[in-house]
Amino acid sequence: MADNNQHKNLKDVAALFLLMGLTAFGGPAAHVGLFHDQVVRRRKWLSDQEFLDLVGSTQIIPGPNSSELVFYISYLRAGWPGLVVGGLGWILPSLVMIIALAWGYTYYGSTPQIELVFRAVKPIVIAIIAKALYFLGKNAIKDFGTALIAAAVTVFSLLGAENIWLLIGGGLFLLMARKTYSGIAPKWGFTMPLAGIRLIGVEGRAFSLMMLFLQFLKIGSLLYGSGYVLFAFLNETFVQEMGWLSIQQIIDGVAVGQLTPGPLSSSASFLGFLLGGVPGALLAELGIYLPSFLLVVATRPITPKLRESEWVGFFLDGVNAASLGLMGVVTWRLAQSALVDLPTVGLGLISGGLVFFTNVNTTAIIIGGVIIGLARYALGL
Image (cartoon, one colour):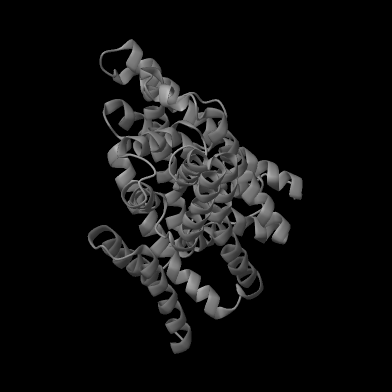
């Protein structure tokens, strides 16, 4: 009987997350809402409190949050087999779609119509990220200390400090400040460590598939916060440090990630394909998700206890504030590349109004951008 239940649970997990992988548009915040509706309200696999505990657990370990939530739910429902099939069901649909789009981009991306499409989509992507930045900021900026950390990280990131040092530094400084003072004194807020500061610029390194995998594995092991923080790491690693990609290609990767359902972090496979074809796409995907996959299993017994720790809570508040600063910097840099003339600025403003003040689905807005780009090509504008 137990085997029958296990088999049924495994089938349920596979069916649910394959469906989610095919239909879950909207980014990490939307994914959490969709998962809650499916596993708490409809299927009653978890209680509200159990679901919230899992969401909190994803904030403690590095990696893409919505994907980690899939891994946790699948593992709890059907054990190791569930973790594998649930994770694959969630990741594979977007991987296949993105490889197909990357192939088209590689072979047709230089044609006038494709260039106009991406030129129209880029301002929309900036508006979508700006909305995520705004709403995440409402949660991340809790007091003077977190605001100061976000501001300091913004400044040091613009100066060229490495993201990981800024994230760790933000967490440690808020932890020390809150444990030392009853209030956050302004004097400590400007002592962000300068370790890792380097001048922004392309160093340029020889490409290899192994190096590609290791870079994505590093990002997957260090990524904290929303999936949108990923693009700060992508910009730092592949544009500034390695010199393998341009900022325009990073924006195009963001756009493709928004166009496809499933995890936003699968945009990594788009960039992997640009660099190394199908093997590059697969290695990029493996590198991004492997750390989260293993950490979910390793930390599941202890993460609920960690969440109860005041020390961990303070550290994560600092990390989240630092993540917000990184997101702000990368949004600014993406905007500089995307908003290049009056039509793109106008489209960005219109898109901003839609994403901030209406309930129009972001995917529909992006599809609208594609139509505008094609119309400009057809009309010769």
